[in-house]
Length: 389
Image (spheres, rainbow, N blue to C red):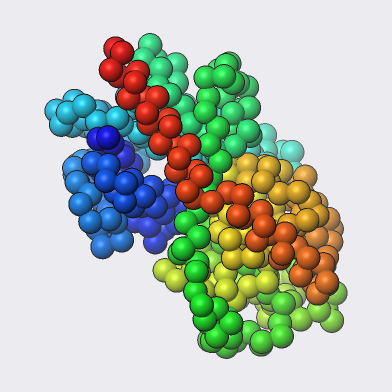
């Protein structure tokens, strides 16, 4: 099958959607499908040999207009290059399949308001959003994606997102294909994990017997770092707990908050990491109290590594958990006491060990091969549609 993957940037080191596209391309190439990538930038050494690249040039300009330019130019190239079954991720349109790994903009915008603890701040943010050119542009783009005359096949990675399609666009749930997310477990298969765990802990000033929670995100505010720091401040001082914070390099505001809360010595800010798997190996559990995630890959990566997980009900990946087996799901990330209580449960060795075993079992149900077969079935359905048309 000739398959076209369309996304502006495929740099797998960034994680998330870009890592997923690389994994999917690799598996498609392994099955000898003819895979084409339409993108503005990519990291060729991390992508499979034989992948055919189609550079899409998007000029500098307002960031909120770039998706429109990318989509239009990508669509033009697709018409020129042949009859591939095309799939677009997030902010693009015109492909045979749309897979909004980042969820709906309409839902994301609404959930983003939740990161503000006070109602007056949420009201102010709602007003600012209503006149924000980026919000207006992305809202119009989303309507172009899902309410145009030519309706694509839509793939989502959680029931949470399928519900958002019905809520915001009245989409019939039967018109949506739910394909659960997965990660390539081979990326975390290291025979010397205990050695790496000790080595990297020592590099970061963490003692071998410290208990380590891991937080991985680029958007710290949306993913709940602020309430997490407040929750850490409520933990008993006798516990040898450290929090690894991985992601965005701008951590000044959170360093100041940690100092104000008296927990600066408990927080290790690592910034962006190419070797994020070492962070998983060094940690004892993942804490991801997000205000919105369609289905967080970092949760699946933690499960693959045998790490218990604490996340929120605003994360589609919470649907894969059976609390308290693999960890805990909080209703409101702003509930600092409950979040702190969840962390405290995983500081208990017996509870943590039981969750670790359950995490490994759960990860086995969401293997990448099963996911790949389901996505391939959607490609086949889209190809049949094209041939019938």
